[in-house]
Length: 234
Image (cartoon, rainbow, N blue to C red; front, side, top):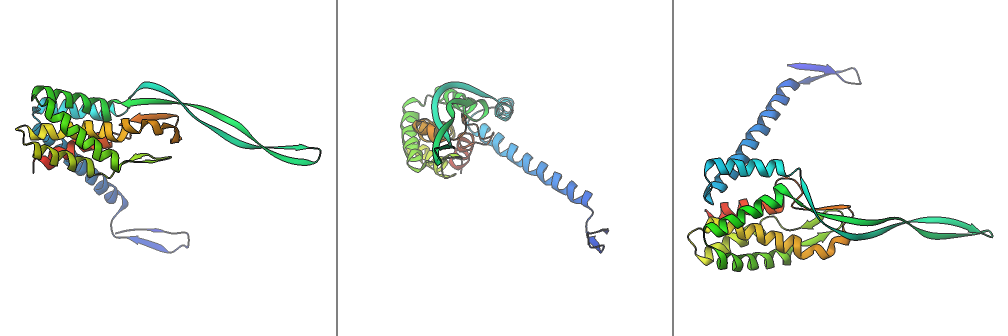
């Protein structure tokens, strides 16, 4: 048992030493991280990647989440601040432009580029051209309906809507490579329905840099593909 004295001078007893609590917290983080890695590796294995390529794809997604590729520049909104001017004793408030923005649109390597390239590979290798076109159109439409542009946050979509739509569509199309179709439909459908079809709302975002698939490794596009495969494999 450990104890220390608070500001009131009274001893405060801790049933478990802080070092043990920290060790347990780190252990929990490691166990949870290992669980996520195993889940993602299993999903990659289900779509047809061997263990070596599954690990390489996962590692590339994690490392690639730190890199964004600029693809476009779009005019942003102009920010104003009030300027007080006194003329002949009368005070006037004049809006003064502070920042005339130019927003840079980028594509995240780990959250968008790698999942898209993997989707294209799965589509071609499994000969799922027309099936993927149909599935992406369905998932993209459903995702776009539920997508909401929230200024200051980005494009928000209910977490399980795109992967559920992708898995159900893959089941209905009744193909042999159902996991591969679910992954491609979920990834490309989310990319098109949530991000690309909402680029015309870019001026509503406050950030000077907009990243497609760039809210970290487990962004909507990345997660949708993985969860779609898991649902399709049930």
